[in-house]
Length: 497
Image 1 (cartoon, rainbow, N blue to C red):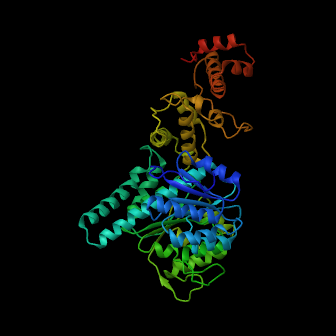
Image 2: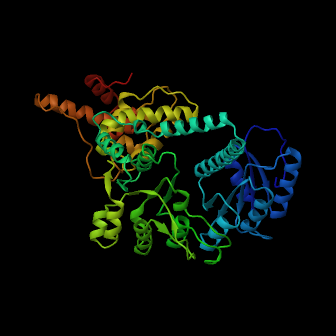
Image 3: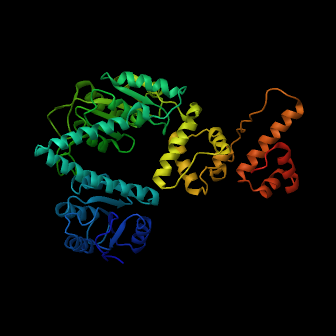
């Protein structure tokens, strides 16, 4: 019920949902209630009243951890509500839900309301859960940092040691050795070169398909460089239009455009003394490329609406899934900017080009999934690993990760079997309509009968995997009786134990 309060003292993080549409409130509650204490309000006034009650009840300056609020409501917008929340309860993380992407609303939300993130409708439950979890973690980290800063200011040497220890732990977590690979992997040579260039203050361009781990490699370069004690900041250049991207990277002055109600420090300034990672740089427009080139050439920037240049000392690591040399030839990317960014280019190989890494990657991801999902696992069956190796993985490591988490969720055994893999992976090709045949690992020698038997075994096994060992379905698909199928399986040694 909107506006109702739950008892204090719960161990779960708390989330307030503010929306005037009952079905939206119910959907948000259902998506969050298993992992969070969810409070609801149907209007701005009801939400403010509930926050006052929670503050009195808990005695806490932050009555809830996170607020999810719809942008358009009768009696006040979400941004107006968040302005009031920011003034009274600044530590509460604010997330705006909207079906619109108006640039002025986004700017006002960032500058005036201090929102943490936008959620666009329609949202997906798993994405919402991940976002709210990250928002809670951000609040806790913010509190930890604030406490440590205050104690460090008081001259606490133990805390200085703890801060140095924490910094060393972060550096260890992003070492090149954490990039999982086999000894004979093509990624090993990429890491060797990256580790070499990390020592020198050169711009690095990482090229490769989406999902290959370019961000992890960029972090490894930063933490192996002399700038390791400086900040590492990143921006996805494809996620924002030109005007917002320029403001986000270079900052802006108050009044420089509609909605700019206060000064904003850009990411280049925040990265001063450290590294900035510009992801998907190949998706930027020629207009923005000119502005970025000027900053890289001059080593200084001018915020939007500003007249005074600000010097910045930043190492740039850029990444793209595009072939930038081809983009230069096509006139879509500036040649002078390309050579500024590509002082040391590296190509991160796709997962299908490093099949020797797949077993160790899959095992590593499975152990992480077992920890995240609190569900034990002890590796993959031979059939499951064969299917993983046969699939081309167009989504690379990101797709492999999703597949393994899905398989562990569905599996009932400690060993992940082929029966819990998704149909596209079982087929070993991209789609059911693909004309590309499944690769057959057939013997190069032997009699005709031996080769035919090997081919028959491959076809039977592929069909059974796809049918999840449903012999009735497999027999019907192959035009065999169930008895005939069983006899063939026994003859070929494929009867499943």
